Every structure is written in structure tokens, then in C-alpha cells.
Length: 254
Image (cartoon, rainbow, N blue to C red; front, side, top):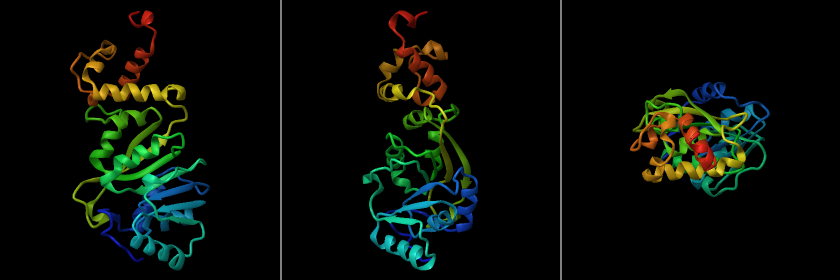
């Protein structure tokens, strides 16, 4: 398979066998439509295509997209792969159910994750290869490490976990950072009612940006005092604070 490994500072997986191993650890089924963001020369796409109903491979770099087309159309002759040569961040998301399986560019991981999940058309599940530090900050149940604002927002709708630590030698070129394979799986029911999700998002963003606003919340409910860092709170603590903030004033001190 032809490769172009120097595109947009992206580190591509070397081995289809590793991709197949990771795919077996996912919830992806033969009836699924799966998006491969930053598909490169098609290592992930070529493993997905025989296993799912449809693959949408997105690659912004024209030279790499040409290699991707040759690999998909001439070498493998896949009929269920659609190649889109555009920037994923500018694409409209599908309205039908879909999943993500992707080694996304590390330098724009946060932008891609926000694009995927800050929308009514978010995926049923996403399997992403990301920097380890970024992946850990998405896991909002772990108070031993710092968590991120985006992790708290995602946690209301998605269960997030690290499935596998990857090696630097799994990539070409080898990245300078540690990497992980993570799962973001939509909860059967969100932890916040869907009608209240915008309010939860606004509350969380304000708490992270304004320490004075956080200090005014009912911190006694979580055994905390003013001055704590919002990145040290767990998802369950955020939900307690948010629910208390939503109560009428007459009930807040009961």
C-alpha cells in the first residue's frame, strides 16, 4: 500500500493487523456506517471496509487523497468506500446514525472532538487514537488526574474509557508523545436530560472560566470549599452542583 506520511504533521498507523485488533475491541458492527477522519493512505479504511456497511474516508491533503483513491479503488477495489477530499471541520455531519474509527491528527484533536459532539448529530460511538494526556483528560470519573472542561461536557452523554496504550513504533513517523486508543460510547440515557444539556454546558463552561462563580455554588454538597480547581472535580460532583444550581431558591438550602 502506498503511503504519504508527511502530511499535515500527522502520524499514521503502520500495521493493518493492529487496526484489526483495535476494531475487534470496538462495538462496530457489519451494519454500521463508519467515518475515518484523516484517512491518510487508507490503512484504517482498508481494514474497516470488509467489516462494515459503509466507510466514509475523509482526507484534506490532495496528494494523500490521490494515494487513498488508488489504494481503495485500484488495489482493494472496495465498492462501499466514499472518499471526501475536504477539511473535516468544515463538513456537515450526517443525520443518520454513524460511528467514528479514526487516528485523528493530534494537533487538532480538541477541535475535532468538539466538532463531533457539540451537535445534535453526534456519533453513536467514536473510537479515536489520541495523545495519552488528551485522552486521560476526557475521562471525567478519574479525580486522581486533571480532567478537562470538554471531558465534563462529553461525560453527560458518553461513557469514555481508554482501551489500549499504543507504542511509538506503531506509527510512521513515530510521534514524540504517548498515545492511546479510546472509546466514547453514547449512554442509553444521558446523565442530564436532553432538554437541560444546553444549561449544563453553559454552567460547566462558566465554572471553568470564572472561579468566583464556582465558589458561589453549593460546594458543601461535594465536601469542598471555595478555591478548588474545577479540573479536580469528578463528573458525579459536577452533576450534583449543576442539579443544585437548577433548584428554585426556596429549595436550595433544605
